[in-house]
Length: 322
Image 1 (spheres, rainbow, N blue to C red):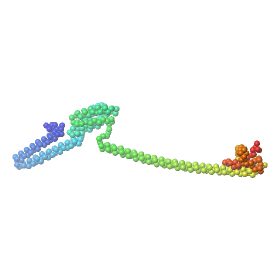
Image 2 (cartoon, one colour; image 1 turned 30 degrees about the vertical axis):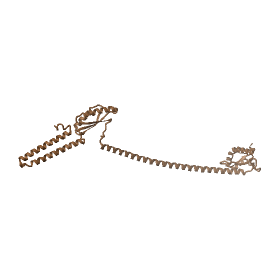
Image 3 (cartoon, rainbow, N blue to C red; image 1 turned 30 degrees about the horizontal axis):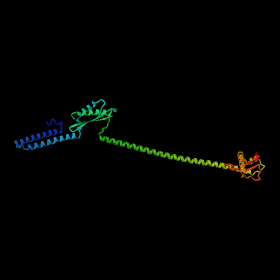
Image 4 (cartoon, one colour; image 1 turned 90 degrees about the horizontal axis):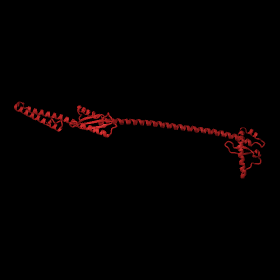
């Protein structure tokens, strides 16, 4: 009777094994004892029977222990049971597809784990109600102790419970991140060095251009000063010739003596005449006017005029011009 119900309870299985061993032990003891008593020459039958029955009990308990340990550690279910659970999950709902199925021992019975793929647009309520009905349907099977249904929106190649795979995947991700960071760092350092070198070249070129422009400006300024100096020297010589001339000399004689300087003096004569006349009038009014010496003729007077290129010039007398 215990053997008949041993599949439904591990305690009944243990009692059945124990009763069987007791029956076999007692039977072996009675048989070997009777043989030794009836046939004294076979006295060794009793201890031999005891040794054999002990070996049998030990071996039987080893196999029982191995079977129970496999059940306790979660041995995989037989392929027939796995196929049966897969057929139930595939035919449950047309919008729910089976992705992963796991069936393994949970004691003497089995534990079932399913991962179902649902459409992305379904609500949580819809997914919870359908998965709960599927869970109850699986738990109604005679060999199933518990069932778990996990819902996902897409199928996944990796096993979410395989920690070795997860660790390897995480290690690969970290390695890729390090490689990308190193490559980015190298590219940044290279770009920075190129930028620094380009800026240094630009600074050198700007400094060279500045020096060249300064040298060009200096040369042009020197040339201008030299030209102005030559012009002033010519003007000074012409003015000296004019001043040293007598009262009877006319403007044409002055121009002949002055040479090239006379042309420059004649060009500046007319505006400077008006300026000298106005200055003379203001000086005569203020009482600060200094008249020229009486020895000089009234036809010509020498007035010092400051200018960039002309220092001394001959101005015709206002009375004569009028």
